[in-house]
Length: 377
Ligand SMILES: Cc1ncc(COP(=O)(O)O)c(C=O)c1O
Image: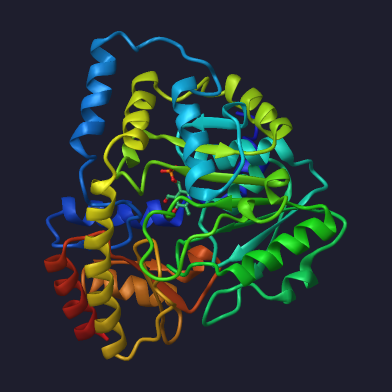
């Protein structure tokens, strides 16, 4: 057989999925593994959302839809973005895709050329670099300020004529920190001064405990150069539904839609009706989940600090990010094999020396995990 794609052969598999699969395998072998490597709410999708999807199936919503996504859903997303995020938008600027991950991939394909550089702010989510590479462009990394994980003007050291896009997420996976207005204003100024696009991944927007969520596209004219990505997975516990969306200037949305037309066509029609129910229906379910995550966050962070670990400001998402002594890969391996607790090494997020622990697990599970980790050291 001839060689497979050289480009894809250079892309590693997702570290978070790999570790979670390893933990799953150990569990299947009868080992009592606690999996805290997963980036997925442990709640079920709220019943009214599931019901809307069942109704859609029963009512024959099983056909092809507009490839940009169901118009009713795009209208609801556009209203949400205007009202909650202060991002001026029209349904024509929204693309509904198979999860935020798919939107990010489409945005990269739509915007990037081989000579382009994309600046990724680290610690960064595992799929940003691969999606830049799949689009054929060059990823460049820059670390946010250690400690508070905010942006500072050292970013400028990585900017040049080839820089096409800056990618970041807030609240952050993996750190849990939330970008403040000063950081976002700095990124905005850099983008405007250097004619750069921003890709702002806001998938954890609803899971915030301290600080406030600000969308960079709401600052001045930034909506004219920002791709705002969001979705249903984290806020509404809809990971398996594969439903996300992006809002961007019209020329970018049109290009993303072309990518979508020739790849997935659109997400499952009935799933999009579920998404509509999520946005239009009661929001108490989101607040209930947020409060439960907050309870776990307070417990986990205080236990980790008591055990002597330095942690990143845990202001949002559902992750604790802690500094470890020595090689984070070895620490995680040891915690998995000796303590039977699966966590994710910071190296997976381009931040060696740190470990991410997901608190998307029940309180009793977290207590047991902390006990095991403390015993292993
Ligand atoms: C920062 C970040 N962005 C995007 C995604 C992808 O979300 P989705 O399930 O909507 O594809 C994830 C999922 O883990 C994430 O953590």
